[in-house]
Length: 413
Image (cartoon, rainbow, N blue to C red):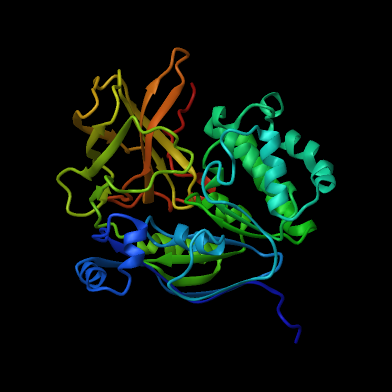
């Protein structure tokens, strides 16, 4: 039997965090009191959180592996440990090769330096010579579509430009392992498809190992034959991607009708903090199941951090594999000042949507002068299940026919 070429090995990894802070007012004071009663008493009064709880898995060289799970499952903590951003509380991590990581927009970029200068810095960190970086420079600039701004300080880049340049750097500079955390959540569809094609190419032709985190199941399905599912810091599934997706959605209970977003992590591409959703719930429901004659009724609440004029709301619906089904909008809800709170109750007609399980995304936005959406807050919303009261004339095939049933055909006379 051929011996496995393991490039990533995670052995019984735990990561613990403490809620609250120590009584010491500085790092020096905390260090001085490390073995003292003051620190001991502070630790005893704090609450311990296990972000990772005995995670173990192996990845072979050249594999493209997906990592999925609900918010708070431990995905980002695991990636930070693999990327040496933080260390595990217990356990071991083995990496046989160099690594390039995109944990959030612009990670590893120096804000005051230009795109070109940041390319050279990242290449140097990976151990490349200037001559080696020079040979890849033109390909990076071309792929990033940022040629016009390549000598501009990256602090002036939009979130989309950040991602384009960061992905190009990770893809073209020499590294054995690529770690990608929701990097395709921003940017236009054309560029996202180009990234997917590049990742497949790197895995097949260069033997690059890719570990990819995404809430978009279509992306995971396209990239990965193998997928790991995390839940509450544990690996609950490791195997075929389609089965992993079923496990992932099976873990989402349809009884969840309320979500508190006040402390939730936002998408890495979201660079604004003008306003934040605080909560969302289904009104008058004990479980998130809706029949074919029901509308989705939401109650949203939010908090203004800066003044906002003509706030708008968008609710998007996605099917079980992450494909977009549709979206509904509400314009010019209200104006708000910093510190103000707002809330609203809205209905959404889903009569055209077929039976099945769906997820949502909620976005608070304003419109610019050209009518484009300027997203101020965006977060994964509540899931729901659509059920039909009576059987129809035919069994619906969602994989072939989609999730929306169009009006019946009309006989022309």
